[in-house]
Image (tube, rainbow, N blue to C red):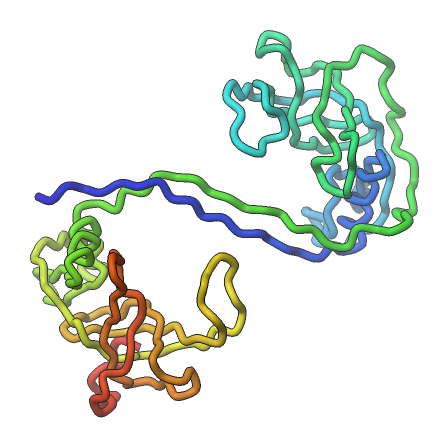
Length: 315
C-alpha cells in the first residue's frame, strides 16, 4: 500500500456584501459608539438586529438603542488565540445580553483567566480607538461593577451621517488535508505524468479521481486503471472574472473532460484554442510544465470531434 499523503491547506477569499437599512444602521451605529437593536412584533429586542422576524418572517425596521452594558449568559475560555482573533492574549468567548436587549451578542471578554469569568457577571463594551463600521468596533467586553443601563431601550431613527452601505469580510480556513489511499495514489501518479482511476468491482465503472469507493454501488474500489491521456470536452464555461493571485488572463475556458477509459469527467482548463471555439466533443490532450506535479491545461489534439453518443452519459 502506498504512503498516504498529508499537507496543510488554506482556503481564503474576501466575502463582499451590501447592507440593507437595518444592518447599515447597526454597523454605522457601532462606528458612532451606539448599539442598535430591532424590535419584533412581540416586543422582543434583537441585538444584533436582523431584517426579518425569525418567528413571523415579517420585515423589521423599528430600531432602538440599547445600553453598552450587559450580562454574560454563557461563555467558553480560549487559552490559545489564533491569527486575527480579537485579542492576542487568552480570553473568553461570551454571549452578552445588553441591558434593554432580549437576545445575546457574541463577542470576547478580556479577563485574566477562566476563574475570573462566570455566567451572570456584569460587563461593558470597550470600544476600539479607531472605528470603521464593523463588529470589530467593539474591541471586546470588560468586567463592569457600575450601574446597569436603562431596562427599556430608546427609540432611534437609525440615521447617521455617511452611513456604512457595504462590508468586506475576509474568510479563511486553515486545515490539514489527508487525501487517503486512493487519492494519494492518484496524486503520486500525476508526478509521473500518468492519470489513474479505480474500477468498481460491481458496476465496472472507472472513477477519476478515485475516492476509494464507488459512488453508485457504495462498495470499496482497489483496482487501479490508467486512463487517458487524451479525452473529450463534455461541457464547459467561459471565465470572465480574473481570480486574485491566479496568473491567467481572462477570458479563458474551464471544462469537464472525460479522459479516454474513464466513466467520470474531471475539471481542466482549455488553452491553445480561442475561447469562443471551444465546444462539446472537442478532443484534447494534457500539457505539462517543467517540474509541475499536475496538468497545467488541455489543448486540442486535432482529431475530429467525438460523437455525442460517446460521452452523453458523462455530461
